[in-house]
Length: 209
Length: 212
Image 1 (cartoon, one colour):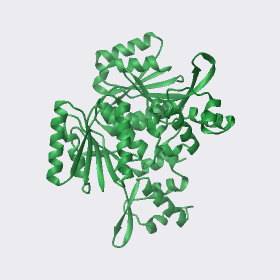
Image 2 (tube, helix red, strand yellow):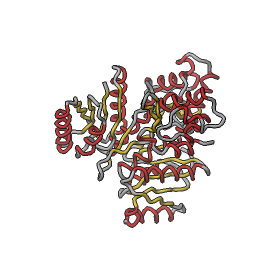
Image 3 (cartoon, each protein chain N blue to C red):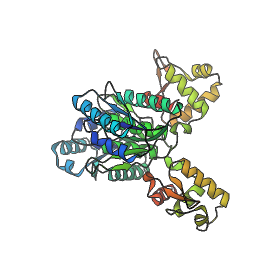
């Protein structure tokens, strides 16, 4: 396990963070916790302990019952710290929603993730394998321009530098990935985003090189 | 046939809204533990499904806190249903212990299954932004073969030379693949028992979840 940033999800049980601190080498600790946790005794004790050992604690406050907020904040923390070195995640603390959001963020960014409790389990995240690498330039262009209910024809006029054949190939690929779905309306296929990808422009922005 | 997978804890409300939202589902496969409250929630889900004419398949888990075992069981079931030609509409991961939920999400990511999370307060299913990709497809056939060998012989030790012989490739080839697998974080090199100068290749325990 390399040195770098350790990001831990945290609820009320400091032992889960301690388990990660003992098992994973790091030089910067980031705690992701609910806003109400920041005032509790366990949290303050952990910060004091880390500072006593010469380390610094950075805290990311989230709403632990809001999946999107948890995911966005963990994702942001990973990206920020990954720019300056390695990032390792421990997902054993906090609410179910926070842990799940952290798992998703770990997979999407290709960073190592552990569940540290009585046993330390390394999750099968492949380092450096990011979800966004599944998309090519044409796919990103299509995602950037696609609006709800577009037909292939209406989409084509908005694209620059993507041939008709490439655009259709991208549409089929995005459908296969579960990002969009064609719906037959008045004999024409109209493309809609799937419920998990309503904010397709965000996905496009993320994948843009 | 289209089925919905789910995890269930003490509250049937963590699963029922996901069933209600999936209009074309014919079967619901859900995981629960043996706790009294979970059994009560199980009965409520079964009763709800029966009313709607949907087949309910409760799947008890022996230890809802054994992350890897739960994930392995879920993965096996997903693969089995897929082999039978069943389409998996979604995996609702809101119920059960935190470890059951995390295991379900892990399987959804690895197997490319859409996942939802029924919000605790609003009871509205939230669709997770997953992609329908088989995560293991980012490994080459040879890398999978090497991992399979290591997983199948997890109690044995293999130096790179021994591993090369076992999978029938040259030492240089195995060296290349092992280096890539180390980079991906799925195998490590550790000192051999009794000969600390030699290194053996070890697969991480959860890597099994990536393989067929």
